[in-house]
Length: 225
Image (cartoon, rainbow, N blue to C red; front, side):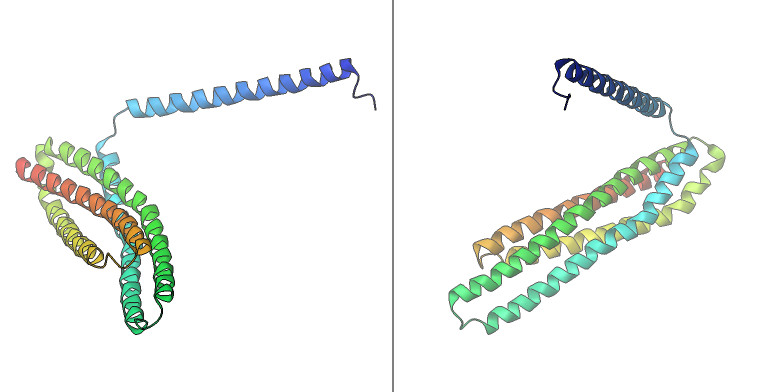
């Protein structure tokens, strides 16, 4: 009942203010320490084994990153086939009913697009890591005369990965062409298709980046021998 007295209120605010200042100081020191560690880590160049491990990890992660995206595109293809059959069967139904059916399909396609966007981030990170890892790894070997033979042994793996990415890019281009071909059913579906094409184009760009990284690595191997 005495909390309303001015001196008690002032004391409470002083205590709260002191606690807040202490928390801010602790947070500032923590952030500064973390930033200094990051800067120090970035300033020290990676070594051959770091790059090698980075490239190997990226190669191993690539398959698991692509698999769910492939599954999603398969599900989209099956959904489109199913909806096409459904639309043909419902052709005699009122237009309003047909629009509702297409709208449901468009919403489902939007969900698939969001899933692809979310998974593509991982694929992009793997691509960047793979490019940096292979460049650092192979450049170091290139400078070691006694180890250049290792590049010859690595080449078939890189060639296989490059061919795989070529095939994936071709499949994605066909997939996009099929999506473009079914535009025009309704505004809702057109919007959903545009969003899906945008998402899958991001996957194609990430795949193309990985393919180019492989091509650069193969050129580096060729130049070293």
